[in-house]
Amino acid sequence: MDTHKQYYESINLPDVLSIRNVSELYSNIVSEFHSRDTIIISIPEGAEADLSFVQLIESSRRQAKSTGKTFKLSSPASGSVLKVLERAGFIESFDQEGANFWLHKEVTL
Image (cartoon, rainbow, N blue to C red; front, top):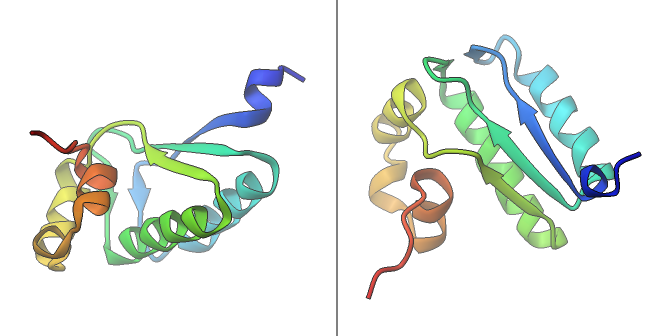
């Protein structure tokens, strides 16, 4: 096994990220948590998402933090995912850590 891959894995998600497949997405993420130190989620451009997906990713992010793992998005939220974040009120309530995770907004001085 490639040593680099042991510590880093990108999970490529399907084009539909909804309640219909959230159980499968959850299983994939949990599996990666057990075998990786760093997990990067790649959301396809044009993916259709609902609130269950955002909740899954948000809970995974918090779980990663509590267990000392690194969990991040390969690119900032956009399209349907960004719209769900806006409609659900996440964007307005993001702290710096949340903004950095979802929108890749770094602290600027």
